[in-house]
Length: 168
Image (cartoon, rainbow, N blue to C red; front, side):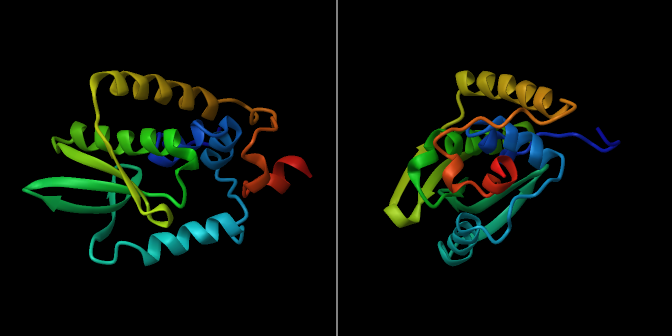
């Protein structure tokens, strides 16, 4: 592993719940196909939804999609194109809430699925914090592997921006 600062981000938490191989690839700066339809759609949704809210606040190594205050309390949002990956998105947002909490900021989280016109509240509780601590350790273990985990066909491979990389 090259000499650089190793840290876990919300994006790595997101990918951990989908595919450990993607965690390794991203952490080793092997980027997916940037012209892939799913990545393009995600960028479009991020740029063209929730226009009245502030966008992209950076906390540590993570970039939070949207944020605003409500009754004097910070509300952060993670915008996703679909609720298909809801558990990944929930844990990514919980990771952001934990990072804020560690910096003395208590916030509330909202998962947002604009195409579905749906929102879901995410609360950071003790159980989720413990789960995130374990996930962080597992992500670091994956990052320090000499080689990426072997590709393993899962339901998400067909629409993955790494599809050709893994299966060519």
